[in-house]
Length: 144
Figure 1 (cartoon, rainbow, N blue to C red):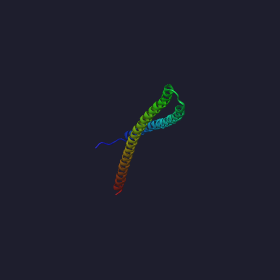
Figure 2 (figure 1 turned 90 degrees about the horizontal axis):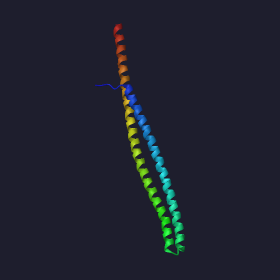
Figure 3 (figure 1 turned 180 degrees about the horizontal axis):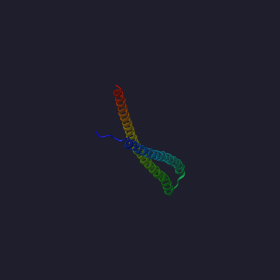
């Protein structure tokens, strides 16, 4: 049976802790990006609503095909902007889900490393206790 050195186990735990911290930072950044893209999407939708309201008034007074074309062009730009904002928000949501999965994995790995550190320290304490008991038993046996 091989023994695991406590220093190696603590180094493993420290490395996994750093990896978890990096994953947490990445998830925080991705979440902030997702929130920003959601706000951008809401802003674009509000602009589209405004453009549609203006288009309704303009349609009421339109007298030519050219004016209808200008109105359609004005609202079409906003439709494209909403579609782009929706796509960016979807991509940000997917990235956030991926970083959340990575963070869960790194957290689980860190907990495993922490349990390993606890086991190694417990084994070491048991070994030291047995050695101390043997020493006490040897000293008691010499006195007789």
